[in-house]
Length: 398
Image 1 (cartoon, rainbow, N blue to C red):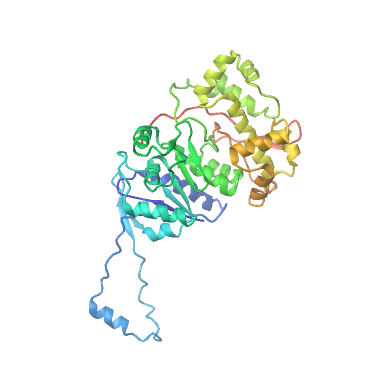
Image 2 (cartoon, rainbow, N blue to C red):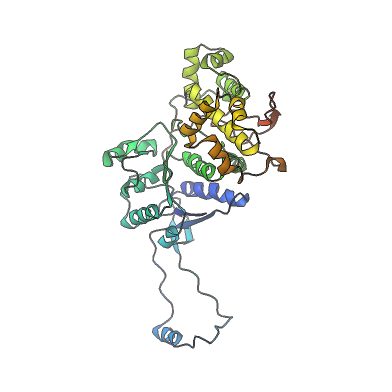
């Protein structure tokens, strides 16, 4: 798969590195042949260094005469940009590079929200029209809006840009309660680090949960933070959150997904009142307890569907779903597919779990550095032990 990332004068190294880091790791781990390239629309091919006489002689050369092997081949034209930190990046491709890509990524945009140029708008429209996926990370949603790709659709961007973007494009249904919004053909993400979540989500949808987990483990980042999590959390989480009641309860819940986990039981485990627990859980994770548990069950089902031969009817109770119907409904809401279709799509592409490789399931609030396994008491197989990391993201401007 060919991925073209838009670079421009003033982009930060941080934003430019996110898609390269995530998608490049896919290739480095041998999970798929994903080629990531940088391009710029501020592209002017270098003028020819030869004079008119040389050109005329070349035009009159005998086509049957072999070229001189000592003469180096002409390098493809390239361009350069200067990042906000002052680094000059050279060797970038031009718009044609994006014209051949399967995925076009705008990793950021200017903090002042200036309109996108005509070249970039036209390029994004053309890429979308020919079937490429278009991704706008952080403020990169602004050029997508200018290109008319998210009009009348849900989208997200950095929380500081919500008001001006809504004012300029009232036709967009901005949702400030999510980390990313994926329509299949267009993907937008919230601010800064949520670009990692969006890129991992793209890996997950193309290659499966286990591949995304391997990438996350390699990068030592959370395998999965739910797209419905808030961009930032107003109140800070106390220090040593993993040892606090919410952290302990979340870790316990991950080990008991195959059991009923109503909020009252979770509150009792945390030794808190139900009302206090719900409030504290939202403050710590950005999600309601029931939604968080449902997301963990879906991801455990993804793991089992990819890595075991259990029938769908067996996977459902093993993950705590009351029935296969309930699991199908959860898959439809979270993934837009059915459990059987998910298995058909990703089972063949997933690494063989018997091959000795360590696979961990994704957790929206898990630390990517932690792994390990235990044997399920119900014989489901190896379930990774997940250590909860409940630190929220701070509202850092891009």
